[in-house]
Amino acid sequence: MSEVKFNDETLAVVHNLMRRYPEGRHKSALLPILHLAQAEFGGWLSPATMDYVASILNIKPVEVYEVASFYSMYNLNPVGKCMLEVCRTSSCWLRGADDVIRHIEKRLEIKVGETTADGMFSLKAVECLGSCGTAPMMQVGKDFHENLTLEKVDELLTQFTNEDKHSRYCDANTYRKN
Amino acid sequence: MGKKLLLQNDKIPGIDTYEVYRQHGGYSSVEKAFKMTSDEVVEEVKKSGLRGRGGAGFPTGMKWSFLAKPEGVPRYLVCNADESEPGTFKDRYLMQRHPHLLIEGMIAASYALGANTAYIYIRGEYFYIVNILEKAIEEAYTAGWLGDNIQGSGYSLNMYVHPGAGAYICGEETALLESLEGKRGNPRIKPPFPAVKGLYACPTVVNNVETIAAVVPILNMGGDEYAKIGIGKSTGTKLISASGHIKKPGVYEIELGLPVEEFIYSEEYCGGILNDKKLKAVVPGGSSVPILPAELSLKTPTGEPRLMSYESLSEVALLAVVCWDQAALL
Image (cartoon, rainbow over all chains, first blue to last red; front, side, top):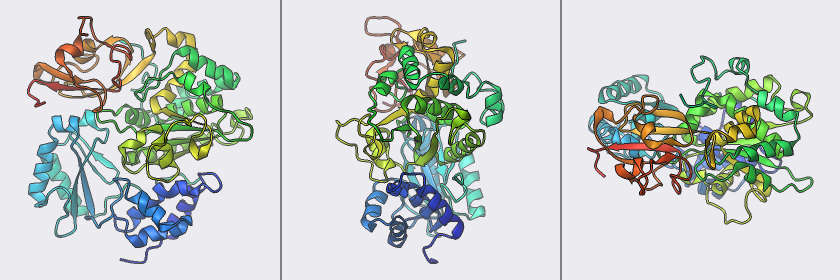
């Protein structure tokens, strides 16, 4: 992997984010900055990435580790380029989430929590994503894919394979340039 | 048709943009608020009987009046957009379709509280809505509804969106504040309450998305008029997330006091049980609430029709209805 350092554009966004909080409270920007770091540096937070974020915020690395390990959206181990997050909570489960998960497991030959051998896909079962009225669903990056059928899942997996892109929750354009 | 106070413009194309929103009367509640003192705005909300739309049902005006106001200490309004209770998706719907309604409500509420900085803490899973809110906030700044000396009122407000990162507990207001400070989302021991020591140990009000949005119609129509809608101490309208084995899942605005049976079976709302099967049970909140078997969902133990109100469904969060048909395994 290339050097862990934001490009100038993203770094400007990072500094803007820090200015959203009062003087001396810039640690508040930790969560949004970790999201940007995960998006930019391979989809997960390596120790080197977390140390870099700590240096930007001028806080101790352990303050970053303890936060990164608390929240479910931060990956502390390498993941596939494309993270499939299938909701398994009540409403999705009532509308067929189990079938969706089993179908993906079979097609990709992995289990929940695993990554395909080619590093393309990781499969995660997650708790309610607020898409209950359009269940079943899965999140890939910031996109919600709703009212899933097994056919639709197949189409999506083919599409993702062809695109061969990293799934991301955010990027430098997510935030207003305040 | 029940009265609509939040979603009345739901079908208007482009209502998520500033221009269209303003054409349909948007931001008039802020204009109205600026003609009042901040205490008068709090008084209107008290009169409306509005109760927290995040599930707890605490009177909003009372929560606002608890806010400490020491000299020289900033106060904050924080919008709880962490919506993580399984089965709830009404705040997502509101923010996605009506971002300016939330922003308008936040300006009026911040003015009432004397807050000059407001944050929207949104669950990280809703990142695509961060884009929507950022764009709407930008529009509001450009149109002079945010920033310094808003519309020449002398009042200034900055507003920011802050994403979480996946933690159910951050819907609890003190955990949310910890998270907003860049820490693990561990709840704080209360007291002190956020109204005294909240964000950065400053007086803070944390309100749910829909609660803040409801301030808009309350100021537009007046607290007394708002209080006439609904039933008893459950005043106004409420957004309900409906999902599971029903014909028409989605978000519906109801007048509080609507019978549960009507909500589930009428064409205006859920349209009945999927494939016309028999209703087995209802989860009348999120997953954290008891499951009501069909007979107790539609009627109370004394045989009265079960109403959608804070009282009739007491101790359950009135956020969502998840229906299970007879075939579902419990």
